[in-house]
Length: 309
Ligand code: ACO
Image (tube, rainbow, N blue to C red; front, side, top):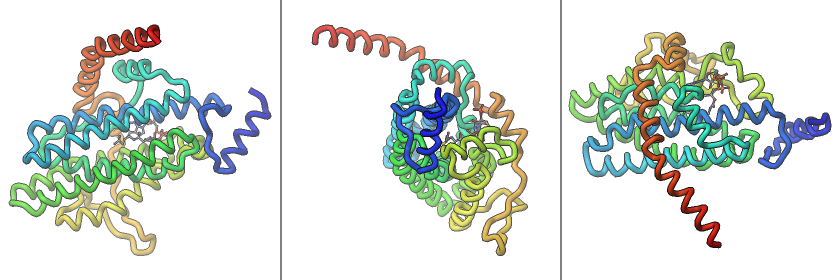
């Protein structure tokens, strides 16, 4: 690694030109991207589980078809992201093995259960809504393959967000019991969704460097605020309430103020102690083990085809 290469990399970043797989990059930049893109890919895969739980119990055929398509989209997002990580030299099998061995993270939000149909609506509306706020910023991340994957992912996520809101609207405008189901779900998901943006800026060890490298364009707290500002009026439009007694509009700043997040709960969930962590990892391990013969057969077939050519 020469000073010249580093200087060229720094200039490229400063000029807002994307870094591409063949370009020289500092090892720490590569490592950070593999960490973040890998975690992101794992989140898409594990994120299929809470919603997949309701595919066989969707209330109508139309809702079932939409949910199937949506869950399939998440698998597609994982594929773009694993491919983006591979352009950095990461190995997909190695990443999956690290996930099921608890050595790589995935988003805390997917360790919460989906107890009712309203939770499926809440995931589409709130979880994918939060994901969009984070991912729109990542469309301008300095690493080309990651930024380009995010453009496509965001288009699909905005469909997911709207279908979630529409499903929530049906419940909120339904019977008293349906409206209560919608409110319960908002009550359970609101606070965990706010932690999707990561720890507060002062407690975010990776932020300063990731901002300097233009991987992150906004801080964790800035994106969290943007999500709250976008979403509170949507909750109100549904005739529902936000489970935060400290929430209030600040005329001067033009932002909502909100209560203290339970960071102890967040760190416990990230450390493996959330309500569904064991179940999620067990499901991924089972899929990995039961899919072994498919991977082996596909590799053997590809090798034979290559020999024949
Ligand atoms: N769940 C699990 N782990 C988290 C979460 C979360 N909600 N938020 C932060 N962390 C982890 C970080 O990965 C980091 O861990 P590590 O250093 O061991 O790798 C640690 O907590 C400290 O956080 P930060 O220093 O703030 O980490 P970072 O700069 O990576 O910022 C963020 C975290 C904002 C989540 C960033 O990684 C990111 O934008 N990732 C891409 C988006 C993504 O992964 N979305 C997945 C959910 S959306 C969906 O899949 C539908």
